[in-house]
Figure (cartoon, rainbow, N blue to C red):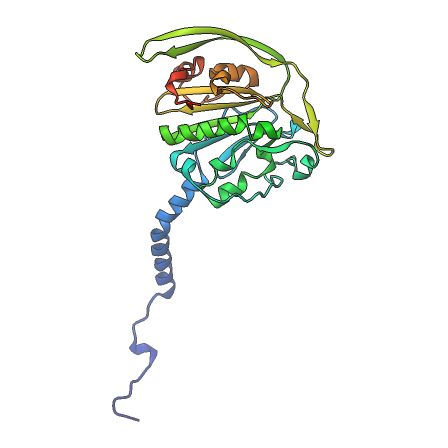
Length: 303
C-alpha cells in the first residue's frame, strides 16, 4: 500500500445530520417557488362579483368564472366573471370541447341534449373572453355555461353585445360581468328614468315605460334533461373604477339595430330576473350604480 493511502474509518469524518439537511433544502426550494405559486393562485382564484346566492341553486366556481346552476331549467341563472384588458386582447385558437360539468352535483345538461334541436350551445361566459389561459378556455365549454340560442341570435345581436363588452374592457381596463337567461315568463312592464348627458356635460332625465317580458311560455329541448329555451337574455356590466354600471335585456330573436335600445338600469334587470347583483358593494354605492344608467358614459359603435 502506498504511504499516501487514506484511512477511511468513519470516526475520522464529522457526522452530518442528513435528514435536517434534506429538510433545509426542501424549505429553500419551496421558498424559491413561492412567487410562482402566488402567480398560479391568481389564475386559480380569479375574483368575481357574484349576485346573492339563489335558494335551491348550487353555486359552482371554476378557474375564471362562477355560476348558479338552476336544475329545473338545466342551465345557470347567472354566470359572473372579471374581464380585464389583457383577457380581452388574448388570442388562442378555439377548440370546441363541449362536455358535462362534473362540478354540478345534480348533473348538468350534456351536448346530446342539443342534438338536432335547432339551437346553438350558446356560451354565457364567451370563449373569446376566456382565451387567456388554456385551462380557462377549456372550462368555458362546460355545458353549465350554455343556454339554448337561435343561431341568428347567437351569431348576431348576442355576439355584437359580447364584442361591445370586450371593447369596453380594453378601453376601461377591467369590468365585472354578470350574464344569463331570463328563466321565467311572467309579464313585466316597468317605467324607468334614464340619465342622459349632452356634449357640454349637461344632463337631463328621460322617463320611459317598456315591457320587460311578454309572458310567452318557454319551449324546451333535450329528451333527457328538458332544457328550457329562454325568451330573453340579460347582461350586466360594472366598471368599479369609473363608478358606472349598465344592464341589457335582449329578446331571444333575430334582432338588428342599435344596442342602446336594450340598455337599462341594473335595477330593472334585477326586477326581471329576481336576482340581487353587486350586493357585496356598499349599500349606498350599490343603490347609486343600479338606479340609473348613463348612456353617454360608455363608448358605442358609430355604425
